[in-house]
Length: 302
Picture (cartoon, one colour):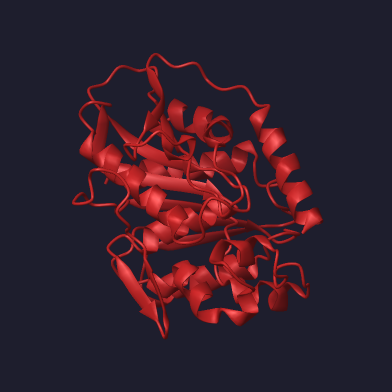
């Protein structure tokens, strides 16, 4: 647990130190839930080229679900590439697992999507294309957003969760997205240690156990509710999944299982397994940022 948290914090500090692109127009600290909470704020950045509207990409930070105010880190990590390629960038905060357990996090992300879609004209967003990308726990939330776009309350045996939730004022607006780029996000929590030959995730205090409110091996139904694979169907948006084959925190089997599920349902999807790639290092390079941008460009111009 200490090892996981230390690596996560180091990774956050690394990307927070990057230089963000200056923009002609941006809005910061907009509360998408209609309350005063920091974890319900988002920032919107527009490209320098003036247009009446822009396709948008929501960016979600990684924090092992422990962070509730890291939207600026997500923007600094992805912002320059996406802005330079004509996308509005929406960086979103969400509740941490210490603020509230799952499904609070996906409820917040869906509320942010609804807010952006409902206020598209005000913020010059072209609501015909809203993509999402995230890394680590943000990759998990991005993938879950992509596969559960039309899912509200859902039951797995005796466990249930309302994935849509009622956060914000636009609960009647769609929370679906049009494309997903998932950077090394967890999926099947209860299989993380078995496919990585470790025991860090099964612990009662692990990030995954904290998220669902109990040890993952004692709560398989709750794990299933938090698993993007549970909701995969043929109507899901296109996916690009990137994962390092030497990731020490989230084993690449997690992405491989998601990719297989998407392929089995006929969802347009691609997985890139990066040789020697770790949990960010080896993946967060210009080559793969370019791959992400090209994917979103292709999907937004169809």
